[in-house]
Image (cartoon, rainbow, N blue to C red; front, side, top):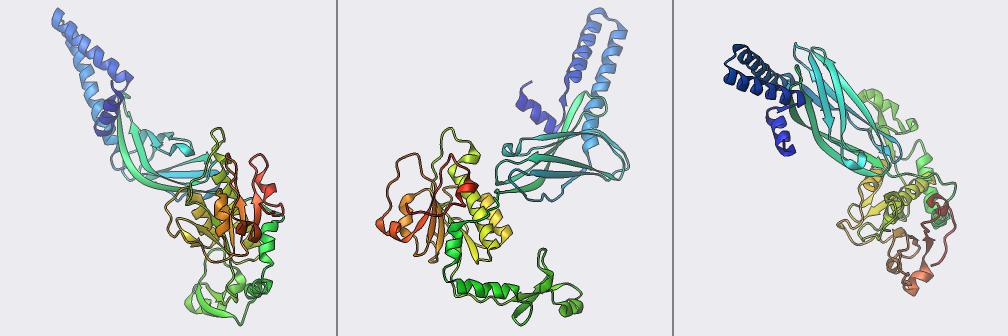
Length: 393
């Protein structure tokens, strides 16, 4: 049978299994033989086979009725970690549900569809199906289609119910631990008094309170305002005034441009993927150094905050539609593959360049005299290169 026809029958009614096709053939054979020989017992065998086929065709759809299906939240992971997905099947009926098959249509980059067999779901009980996928590449993955199938009770016909259960899995880019990063350290030394004032504000515990807000996961306990927390019967955290002179470190990823890729280069080693990894690594290194750092991409503009930055980097792609083509007028750390863009950077900026396979076109002299940075080589570890001192192009 044509596969498309079989899928349509299975989704809207039932489709015969191999044993079902065999019984259909035997029933027709007995009926024809009985017609030719006028033997009553052949008619009886044919009638019994047809009766079994009728019962087997009605029961699979009935078994799948009233089953509930939901999905537990999928927690984000970093590339290289294991992603856990959990589906919950509810049986609210008074009858047990047996011999079921569930299939989750996961996108191919995560590993493709996953199938699980369920022997029994007792009445008013739930069945938890937890499976794991090793992740290799960062990204935001969405899918929603789940199949519930059964051939219960005789195994002659397959029936299927299609459920829409939305899923969203976020795989963050890898963040390398850096012992040092001269590129960031040199920028952090500019106007150091402004950043020192920022550190004093972050370390303060009293006298600098701007407002109170509800407690969020990860807030330091030293900022909890216990008197207000007791009054409102929930934890309240102080927001402190931060004194800065306006200078900020902005890590800018040139995601609005097309990035060249090598024909035989694995996806994880492509220049844009390396740039995303570098942006995440440098952002958290700057945060660890207590710098006021933000991330800029063409699609999102300026963003700040660990989770927001990681989600932005997980979903960014080369050549994306620019939300705002104008770069911030602040000292930048520019991650690009286009050497001609280095001449447009604000004073005091730095750059990281992934060269293309073609010979590099020299940037304008203004870029050479005002900005220093790193040229990344594809045959050396990225983590080690990010810890090297910057040079002029």
